Image (tube, rainbow, N blue to C red; front, side):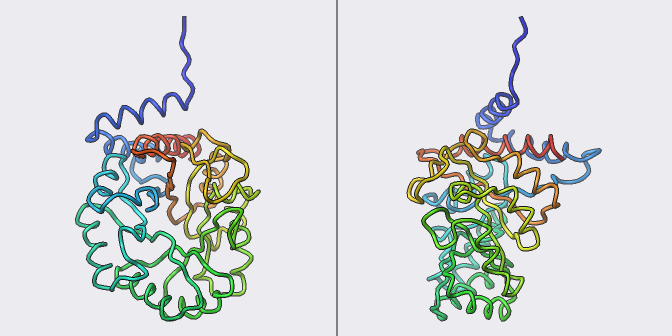
Length: 290
């Protein structure tokens, strides 16, 4: 008798085996990246990282250790890791350097609230710039877009506005994309594919539509077609209802130059196994579609 394994079975088995051998997982991740190119001479065509909210309850040291286990070295630091809104430039610079010393690159931030409070907005911009970042993720009030337009020009930083599902100011990525059209091109979109899906969005179509101003992508999956932000029904990527394959295909099609980040927030005491399985699934898609 012949036993047939689905692609997901193989990926799940590989991810869980990797968790049992933390030293091996980094090598497997690098091998997967290299294998996606002829001759193994270039990196994966899709840059992957982890969004800070995934590990919001972990310390900086714990985050560094967890990222080494899952084999990714790029992270968007949440406010519980770096005090973007209420810290000092020196504090933010020092913590980002601590990540760097641990082999982790901070590429962006968790969501920073931007309102018409210009002093608060400037503090966040100062902290992001002091930490050496070129991009941050914002939870933006629509009426504060003119202020954001002024500040991105002054500080020369890109801002990716996060869509956040059915109950928020910007439920879908398309709504963000429409809202930023009159403003400086440094203001763009952080497309959260799960939240957008719950608000009726086709995230793959949004990738293609917003490609010129798509600065971040949050990769997640959900077990529901609608719902409130308080319960996004998070699940392992590939086990829910979002057409993740379609999203990855669209990102590869447009040669997406920025980073796609796993925002895994299933209610579990240990999120590493589910995150690892999610990463394995997406890496498999990239290898198959590239």
